[in-house]
Length: 474
Image (tube, rainbow, N blue to C red; front, side, top):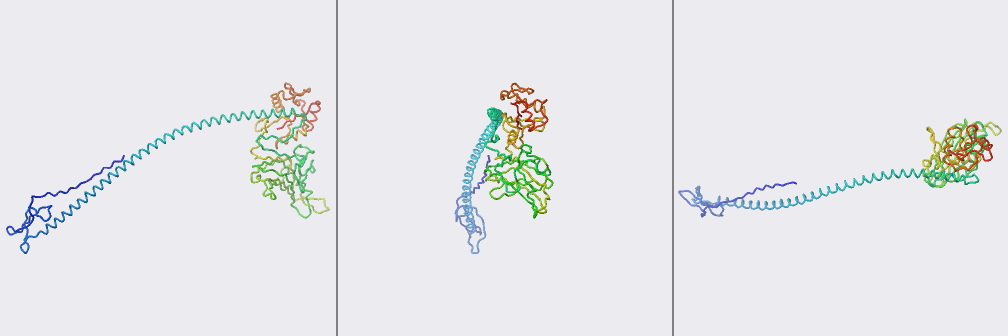
């Protein structure tokens, strides 16, 4: 509260009147005597004062007239001061009224602010309670989602086993379920062309034509009978120039938000030059999306390409390109320089989703962690030949292959899994096999052969007319 103290000084001018006398002047004892009355114009006071006579011998009243005029001006000034004071007093009263009104408005505003702060504190408390409730519900939802995922995984395993049991032909076909919505995998092992085309230099072959360059076997089966795409540098050699390139092209892929491409490649040879992969849109292929230079060893290597919407928003194709410096000295000469530069490609996996969304283990798989290694097992109980089982396993993912059980620890783990699925199999138990409450595994450790592949299949077939190698994928 601001208090204004107004001090006003009021000056009152009062002129007391003397007894009534008639103003004027006369001679008395030889001097001019004045009679004047203050406050009355043209009159003299009763106070008499002697003044020298004028030269004519008469009295003069001009001094008293001047005094009278000054007094009149004084009264006028006092009147103006009174009027001004009245105006100032009115302004002070008005200002005081405005101040009181503003003070009341300020008090109302302060009260409103206090009310608002109270409501804000109440809302903040409710918001904190809501946040806590949401956090609790999110935790409960996460637990429920995990439970449902576990239940779904078990259900998928059941469906897989039932499909394998009900399929009398022992054939499980189609692309694998990735477990991520409508994402699909297009896989090619080059046992057929799968729509891939070439103009020169590249061809689908089997075996190992050369010991100094190219792979020792295909990647799908690991055998000389499997097929793969290979660039033959010797066949591209000419006498007029070096630096030859050759390409092969994939079928067209439909637009998607992202793509993931995985493939096996081999760059073995002392004269290996360059290997490039492009994502071709229309007639232009732009910059390479994958590149390797020089020899990469005799084993198959795995390559991965992540393609975003820059490449995948329109239909596109993959272009695989190899380079060689193979050179023939003359048309009649069989000597070719820099010919040890063959490049090969096998097992191409194309997913219409990003690489980060592809799960490490397929849906329904059994996950086993030993140290820093994670292994995923899936069971497909329908009977298959070794080659069909290997091909099927390869089609499930670029790390998948037919399982060769080489350790007792791993076999015991698999037996434990089979024990947990009693009744899903219906096989006659051959002598020497491990029986698990009516369920049959393949071979005991004492009779397990020190080999794999076709020899293991032959060994298992030799145990009885219903015996075969157990197809497991990892």
